[in-house]
Amino acid sequence: MKYGVAIFPSKEIQDEANSYRMRYDPHYALIPPHLTVKEPFEADDDELKTIVEELKKVANETKAFPLRVLKVSSFFPVTNTIYLKVDPVNELLALNERLHHGALPKKQTFAFVPHITIAQELSDDEFSDVFGSLKLQEFNMESTVDRFQLMYQLENGAWTVYDTFTFNKE
Amino acid sequence: MKYGVAIFPSKEIQDEANSYRMRYDPHYALIPPHLTVKEPFEADDDELKTIVEELKKVANETKAFPLRVLKVSSFFPVTNTIYLKVDPVNELLALNERLHHGALPKKQTFAFVPHITIAQELSDDEFSDVFGSLKLQEFNMESTVDRFQLMYQLENGAWTVYDTFTFNKE
Image 1 (tube, rainbow over the protein chains, first blue to last red):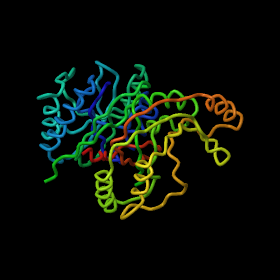
Image 2: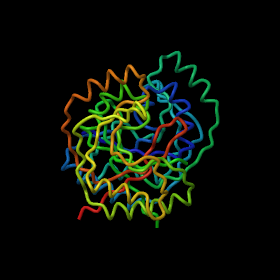
Image 3: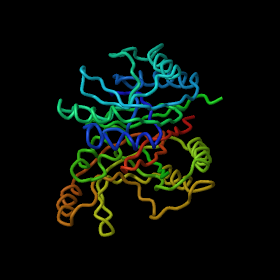
Image 4: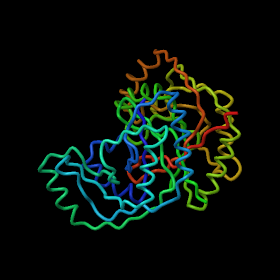
């Protein structure tokens, strides 16, 4: 099965992201708004057990940290994806690092740019219009991250949460 | 916020359910195929803390049990909902009971009929057609339940998983 690891931001930020995603993101129906901290990877049932144990360790070593969204950015010209740019605080970067060590799959195709996608697969004209207006807008949303989720993908492309890993809050 | 508690069956059962849901269930995009074990309830942040502690206790008291789907059934004439009928094993009935005790909200509008919805809000003609053909079909799917999930609802009606409660597997 194909698995991935993501953080779901606060309901406030998810609702804001969905107000754009419903129009501009064909993945709108497949998963709630999220920040991917580990790209999709294949694992069988045996590997899964090891991965779950590793993820527990990672979560135990992680302290709650702030998730701040201040503006919109884009991966243009690589892709037409538009996203809520998430402040790359050290704790988040360190979490991403730890999710690619030890017994965990190490593959990470792109440098880690913390983001919540709100538009993708737009035509060039659509992209120019939407990004042109959104990039002028200020955002000021913050929530606290104290967990991440391991998900698996169904045949229709949607993701189901398999397990939740809460940080060590001490 | 509005919360609910559900069990996600195996990927195999979810994929099978989605093959019908994509055509017949307008909630298809809001949540993966699921078995509701506690109907939606409102809770504030303080109540949530208590509820999470209670859910941990319930999960600790619960042993893994089989989830078997053998046929399709319907809530007609109350509603036109069609569902995969889930074998009401004692462990599942007991779990549902425990999720309505102690500090947990007690409201349960209907008697508990374990089911995975695959069609709803059909016209009467559609209902007759779809149920007429599906009720003749045999299903023989089984998976093991070893967890349930607490979810909250976004403004667009979709559900995000807040936490996962795994059973005491000893």
